[in-house]
Length: 560
Image (cartoon, rainbow, N blue to C red; front, side, top):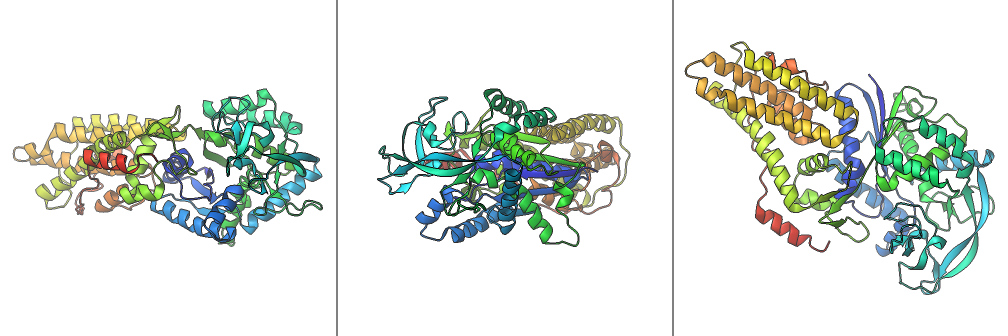
């Protein structure tokens, strides 16, 4: 049994997230956490809302409420949606918590004591038209590196390079569009990442199992030269800087947000201090497998900036072993956007269909090696084929056979034959491949193996046709039906990390625990585990989505 510390990129607080956020970090992390629990590993799955920074302040102002009250309300909304989606966090915390404030200030003090903090005077951008200093994200212009014309003052969304507002070509206010911007001096604190390059290079070299996407981004940063990073901002909402002369300033959101992984674990331990110890996962540990799931735009902060914070502290913190970064999910040929409300958002998705439809499609089409485009037509075609016609059909046929031919009791007579032995061997190959893909966090390939096992079960049932053999050879018919029940149990077991609600309903109908705690064995289909057991009936698990459904939703979300 291994110890797996699993984290998902922190969803930002400024509104309900979209399908791209779910596909990029939250869902892959949940599927991996469920798989690791299923094979018997000790799992701690941690996440939190990311609540500091300018967008939170502006969203609160737009909502005409206090920023703290706004963040509290939005955290509760997001937490409720994630519960509906079946995300199995052990703790879902908040970056604005007292724990994260204290820990962020602790890291800063360690870094300052070790000589990695430097004070500098920056030229800050002020907009007379807006009558305020403009935070980085609210200055837009042309990226000096890739020439993207809508780059933000903190990061270019096109090439993912971090930026400062003064780097932008032809900058303008994102609030008013004004190009009449002034530059004024302001004192700030920098993390001297350049002084940690040697340690950072050695740390990255010691990692293994990173996808090529993540490795290439990290290596690109190293080859181009790690720059020192400003970690303070002229804002009122955030973690206060505990240094004389810096009153009224807070830490940059990307300095405190990754620290919230640790702080959220402390909050988890606070809820049951007699049995939980956060240090078991983060402090002087060598037997923890730490995995972070995130989109490619977050890779630099997790592969470079946060490791610099940990290394520079000089303390024995656990650092990540594997960063599972993925590409982007796009929407009908364009980008999802929270700020522009473009795409399908998670509350809207849940109002349309149950969570398992979305979970399955996003996993089976995970944007691992390249961007994946979501369209309603493609979504409907895929879930109709995989869920309704394949898995749903298997469930329906097997349960109806047991009801029709054996009064709802799984037959116990008869012995498996050569067809079942061959079936078990073929199933063993698929289960081995599936586990390999899970271990490598290859979500799309894992979903392919789940689909292959569903098809294998349907093919066996169609080929052996127990309804035809019943009159001439009732024992043979009983064997096929019982084997099909066993196959259905395996099909539900392996589906559980992906579509937990549907899989749990099937397992409950089979008289099994609704959350599998062991990995299935191919030999189980030859056993008499279910013989003599009554089965419950189930209504259809999935409905087929019509062309009208596709057209209606394309029209409904057009232009978003």
